[in-house]
Length: 219
Image (cartoon, rainbow, N blue to C red):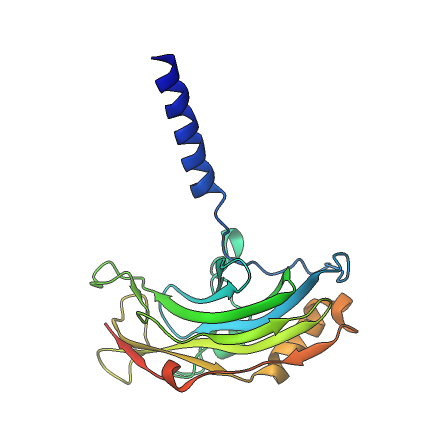
């Protein structure tokens, strides 16, 4: 009986570790972070935005160990509803952008952008998220001590109802589509303002997409 209890205890402990120790989403560095403390570390810069839904996610995979972690447009806690692009969030139904500038630290190595997802708000939606079943990977490299800019990772949605109305929390989302574009003029300027310790860090642009990513997901 004691042996069975010990086995059960370790089984529960391992399960909790697997669930609790799984890598979470990537979060932006603190504004006062100083690069270079870890010689094997590099940095990913991207803006992650959407014009609707609860949150947009773009999934990054580390090729060496296969770990997948998302960059997400929505913050946590007090910053959950904040947007780094407030001047663009009301610029129109289709061109609006709401989200975050992401500067994250990761081990240097080979990475892939592998998919995206849009989390929905309304309970009436028949799906909790819109996401492609599978997409071909977009490879990029992270070099030690260097910032690599992946672009503006944006999910553009279309709404049902009156095209002239302003979408609100109850507006039904009909379609979603991911776009990877170069907004480095805006994003690098914001990085320089927010992260003064990175002013002299080398920066490389790696804004890439693939034709297969140019698809619309319908609800």
